[in-house]
View 1 (spheres, rainbow, N blue to C red):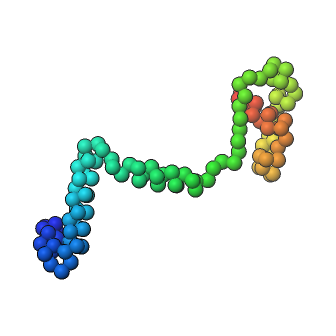
View 2: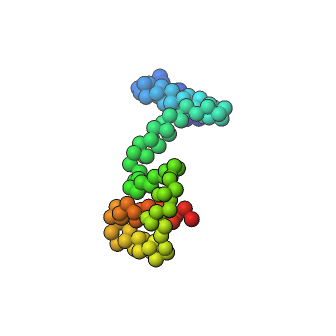
Length: 116
């Protein structure tokens, strides 16, 4: 009904506005029909908005790396074996001062303990 009234309004004083409404209605109809057929013309808009949102999403500041090749001497070293008390002390240090304040050996002990 509204489309019919807009069509009648094209001969009135605001013909350009009514034609624009008719064009928008036509594009909306075509867009819906394409979505029903499985074609998403607006997918690029969604992808672009998700990309922009990801730019402002907070990231984790902790970077953990894993080395697959590890020598037996290093695997059996004092730094790679840790008791539960040492792990608890390391975790307490993290909660008090943060992960960045750990020494390389403490990080290695924590990482190796997490693999068990």
